[in-house]
Amino acid sequence: MTTTSSPAPIGIISALRDELSAVLLRMPPESRQRIANRSFRQCHWHGQQVVAVLSRIGKVAAATTATAMIERYGVRAIVFTGVAGGLGEGVQVGDLVVARSFLQHDLNASPLFARHEVPLYGLTRFRTDTPLSDTLAAAARQALSEPVGLLGAQAMQDFGLHTPQVHEGLILSGDQFINTAQDSVRLVAELPDALAVEMEGAAVAQVCHDYGVPFAAMRTISDRADDNAHVDFPRFTEQVASHYSAAVLDTLLAQLPA
Image (tube, rainbow, N blue to C red; front, top):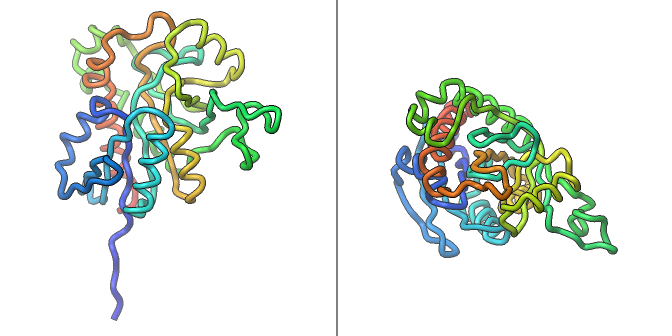
């Protein structure tokens, strides 16, 4: 007699509730568990077992969350979604960036190690999982194919969105909110291929590297990480970024093997 077991769940992480609000409405929890002062929600979505959690802000908080998720739930993959500041040329407010790699822009253990190198890893960049990121990028493009239908004409007008695009490449992470032109210019000068900057992704990428768990991440650009950084951040995350996340994850989970 043979028995079959359900596949391990997919993990979904965001830093803040506003970034995941539309997603949480689509996945009423079948159970909740409090671990490390975080509420992990379990449910099914498109036949997939899903575990969702809010990590809070910063690299340490994100690493704690990813580790707890892997250890307690044995997730087979993690997807991170949220907002970021745009750095790359042509990366505009309302665009989506799918990460192909992450780097900690505030890490400097020189002269023992090269600038940005993670000590004892021999790496400055942690790559995301290629097949999962390919599927995520395709889902992102599908979601943005009809942005007015997704967000509504009023939200498009309010936030000055026109034809949102999907970008793929390097995302920077650091325990610093980048919101001045001086800081963003410095980052682009140091790392000219960087598309966006945020505060959690590189930490989750490193944890997933350690555990051998596939990782993918998507960020909605909320501002250009300069002196004109968006002033109504909560409204943007709730009315734009969370709807992007819900639409993209809906397509992604429908395409992954159950």
